[in-house]
Amino acid sequence: MAEDYSRWAAEAVVEALSVRRIVYVAGARQCGKTTLLKHLDLPGAQRRTLDRQQTRQAARDDPDEFVERSGSGPLVIDEVQKVPDLFSAMKIKVDDDRTPGQYLITGSTNLKARPDAAESLAGRMRTIRLRTLSQGEVLGLRPTFLERAFEGRFQAPAVPLKRSELIELAFRGGYPEAMALPERNRPGWHRDYLKTLLTRDVRDITEIRNLPALRRMAVGLAGYSSKFLDKAGFAAAYGVSRQTVDTYVAALESLYLFDQVPPWTPGDYDRAIRSPKWFATDTGTMAALLDWNRDGMAEDSDRLGKLAETFVYNALAATADVSDRYRIYHYRDRDGREIDFLVEDDRGRMLGIEVKAGAAVRTDDFKHLDWFRERFRPDLIPIVLNTGPEPLSFGKGRRAVPIGCLFGS
Image (cartoon, rainbow, N blue to C red; front, side, top):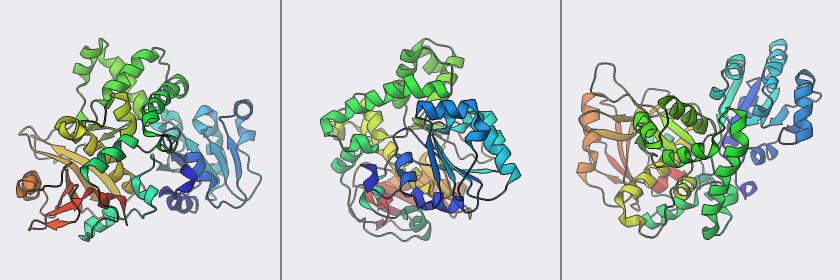
């Protein structure tokens, strides 16, 4: 269960409380937010959860009184999005008192879905994303991959990852409760999870009433993981308007079921595509919604590629989220050149990452990275992630790196 694992975000939360008035731990329901907060050492903290109806009603009746703090530690409020009036009440408190560490709140929805809340707390709050469990957290490793990659320090992974093992981990996903189940029971858990999410939590952010259509949209979007979303084609396929697609997709993103990865677009190159790529935030949920079976997955190159790239995205994002030093992009142009991920750090350095689900890497696998480095970024660090056992040099700073290195050290 989640309490057995040390979460990478824990240190970031404690550090943020020392300098920011409000810290918001945001992530999908059941990803481990409540468990994380319970295990933090927070002397003098008060804890309240809005999942309890009586507590929720008290917050609605008198939000100003609800956010009064009586101890020296932070007031911890779980699922704060259920009572939006609490945001303005906290704003008043922290504007009168600029002491850091007053409120530690969690939520299962992205505050972008509530512009009034996001704007009222701008500059007063640090948001820390908590994702589903990464394999590095399960293994008790430190999130060092990006740091090592920028320094060019690679070593054999603590746990090598063959293609079959990559598929197994991806189908398992990272929700703690699902991970603890026998393999045959996990797909049903993921489908029930989506049903619960759409019938309960979606009401916190939208007025959508056609929940069967929203579920179909979720399944459809899972099929676009690691791809570009053609919203016009999506609308035609589902027999709805483009506006409906925008509303439904925004709701699913706000529930942290899907992420957008923005494009890296040079200002003087009009061949670059300026559309985001979409990713499911949990590969186990994605596989369950698409009714995928592990049997034969290794021979289905399209599905395997989608699964591997989505798995790598979530591992990269889990590492990047620990600090605010890194930004993840993708690149594609109208001439067919594509780079799966570009990661830029706060010093302006850049990694270029291609993903392969196999162990065999060739010089040709670096061709788009080579072109990008020559055309835009001579400082680019080219990496091809693969399921091989150890890092290999391909000359000119190019490295083939095992996917297992993503888990940390």
